[in-house]
Amino acid sequence: MNNETHSNSVSRKKKQERGARAPVDLPRIAAAVREILLSIGEDPDREGLSETPERVARMYQEMFAGLRTDATVVLRKTFTEKYDEMVLVKNIGFESMCEHHLLPFFGKAHVAYLPNGKIVGLSKLARVVEILSRRPQVQERMTEELADLVMRELDARGVGVVIEASHTCMSIRGIRKADSKCTTSAMRGVFQTHPATRSEFMALIQAQ
Ligand SMILES: [Zn+2]
Image (cartoon, rainbow, N blue to C red; front, side, top):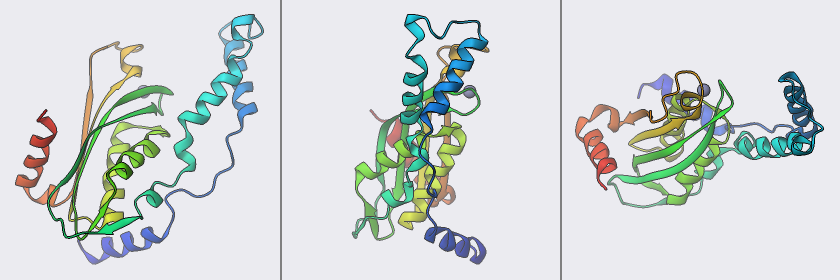
């Protein structure tokens, strides 16, 4: 790592990943959903739709809860440990919202790192995946954010992330490819520089 990227990562470390945000404005979402219903020619006051705007507002509050949670804090409680082999958490399920269509995409994340004296509770990696997914997202960025966060907060020797997801914006609209899956990966440190480490990671993911 050169000096410039090193000092950047140190100064970023002191910052919170997400600043304080105003709470979700539920009435505003509900009013907007009512407008959408009117715009498609529906009657938002008919029985089946009368509570829909408020229901959708609460759903969005839940789906976007990750906007108000700082994922870096989750990784700050580390343990000093001599273990220096690969740590891998496979098949972390997640549900996210594609920011281009506001439609769900969901799948599995696989996260591995090579510790550098610091390890983190395994459930914390799953928690970070959850926080990053509960935001308007694109799969590619989520993959990179996850790798960068783990690399930075754990001072890891390397990080590998693979995400496999189904996008409903591809299955229910547009080209309608119901069975397609999108796979993205991000490699950092020795996962990038050592093909053997990357191969070990990929083999472990594929092993049942
Ligand atoms: Zn989309």
